[in-house]
Image (cartoon, rainbow, N blue to C red; front, top):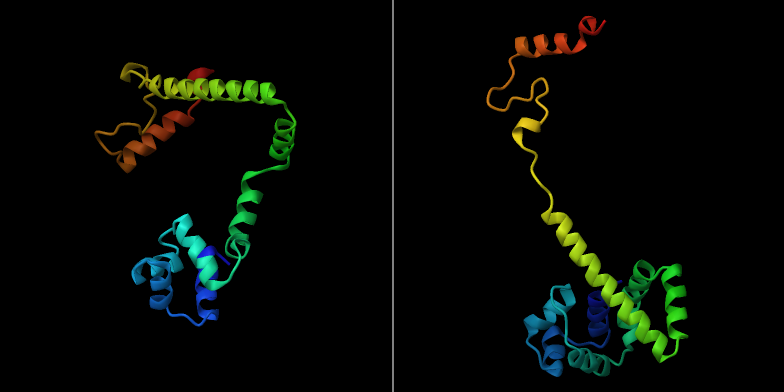
Length: 157
């Protein structure tokens, strides 16, 4: 169940209408409706008021999002790297941060250069295979003729 579903469920369990909860949170009813439909994201302050007003825990509201996020983003290998990083002293962390930032910048520049270096092949170098003409669509007779030429290996014997 998503955050917005749990928010709505909690409001209903508390016996509040959207209008009543919106007033307690200091937001418009349409804003609260957006939170409950997943079309808007509440501020941290609004979430804190909602937790207090509805007498619920943040873990309850976000449990599925947190689980999905950690399963999707943090792999076992990532966790191992994070554990190693956390065990470094300040100098080690600074070195890793510096290297990571420089390598990230280098990779971005390299990717940009690669995309800029894509060159259109000149027309005189492009393959002009059978049926490749774009100015005139092939007729059935022309296509049959071209196919016959392509299948005839006698010229190469």
